[in-house]
Image (cartoon, rainbow, N blue to C red; front, side, top):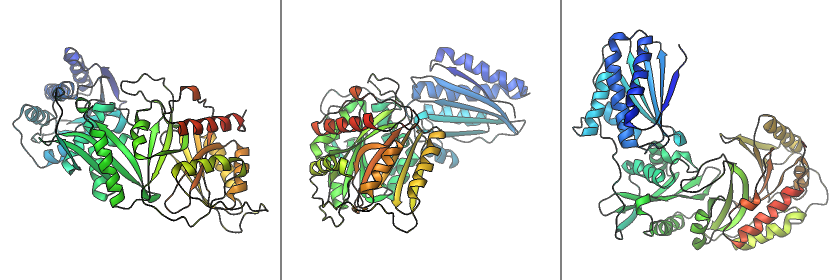
Length: 489
């Protein structure tokens, strides 16, 4: 197959002809002289829909590539989200639609052989058109595309809070886009299929604020943690821009807390960015306390409406207990961090028993377990699930491999309920790790967060922390960072 060819155009009807000339010229190069006109008309319909209804601020990428059976054209843009799964379903079921947008897609499917749509997270959406070499087409009907949002209401809006309905998943994605563009930390929120399926399995509990006309104006959710099902990540909260300042987020948060109590979660937490204080202040009225400062957690992003440098984003993790529970496991903090750890537990309102550090430094004669996980944000997380002879060597080996593989930040989670943690933290800090905070768990196996920055500098002065407790944690982490061993320097 020939290499793909790509052009980038602004989302402007005045340059539509240039994009069509590009696609037509590519089709001619592939010997599709007789198919040039339908290809041009099909792509024109697709681009007009994207420009008119998607309104992507950053322009549009059009890629052409010769395939074994024909030519493929990909249109990628970061405009308003739409429900790709619903479009695919209606196209497959031959659902006809006589609206203007429906006729556009009907024509698109008439001119080319295949049309498909896909959400691609923070990269936006993709429309794929495929034309076969000298092969008969099948005409598929069309569906309605999403239209431009109406202006903001002038008066207070009446709305109710309720669980999200499956067909409202696309409106949730559009709310996120309206509030954040494509900068929301969890890119899955732009994929209606993900939102719908996660709610169907109960792994995501979405609440929506809807107007009396059943329009989705805001959303908030809890994601139940895979590693701790009695702990919920509280967030995914946003309001469509034209409905902001109506108290919507506060009411969503109130109902979300009631839901957490109803299903008897032990903990809920928020991961608030440190590039601004909005998310931190939103959590303050609900009793969240800072527990850890996770440095350089996510890759650079441009926040909508907020001026920021292009740097990795730090997260302030704040926890709140939901259901009272009697602790049965003591913790064994390293002596030099004991005072700070005690302060964090006191802020949480937790009564914790502190065990005495063992006199000897002998690992148990049992197999060790270290779980190493890399993600797409150049970060690696290592979780020590069980100590045993050889665990230090395993951590050191995994640590070096992660650094050589280009990981920009490495996190090490150690179990505070294990006596060996009291002295092993010294060993890990000799490798270059330093204190990040604590991570409470519903089973009592709370974790101490250690972190290592691989040639990344953190601007502590630029961090925006809303609370006194959070600033005290920041100062302590900064001190530990300054004192950390630099193994590769």
